[in-house]
Image (cartoon, rainbow, N blue to C red; front, side):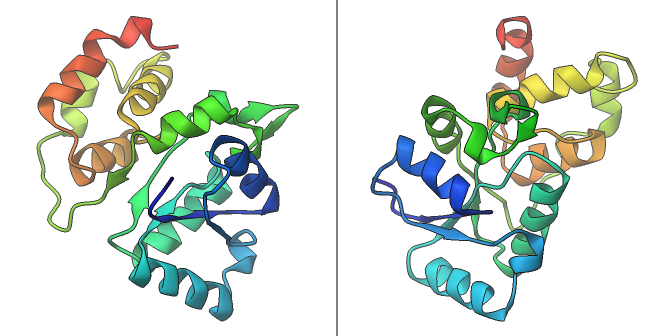
Length: 182
């Protein structure tokens, strides 16, 4: 049973969550346009009472919603489903993910740090082949999935490494296992 309340985009996402966690409580945003005063008030009540985990679709719209919610709820927790695991029938979203993928994402929940570190840099990503080559995007995607921080361009990826408290040891383990990550 999850202590926090999951914030997802729509009713189909809730159905997918319930296949993995039948007792999970969820709130829906109704997409970016659904983030109206009442929706934000409901999310705020959950945030203040039990905490929330933001689990949006691994696409542009989902990331836009996540960024918006992060500004309003800075101590929210975050879970990411890798895009490859949330894609089916030419559609990308939490509703496309298997119960196993949802469980895996929620086992790697991260919280943004109030005082982010500056341990990881874009220059380091370049030197490690995570930037500047044709394969960089795929490599970042695999490492992001392994670490539970999701996919992002280099700037977003470095920000998440630093903001979500990824340790040097975790990062190096992900690098060592890169070829074994699906």
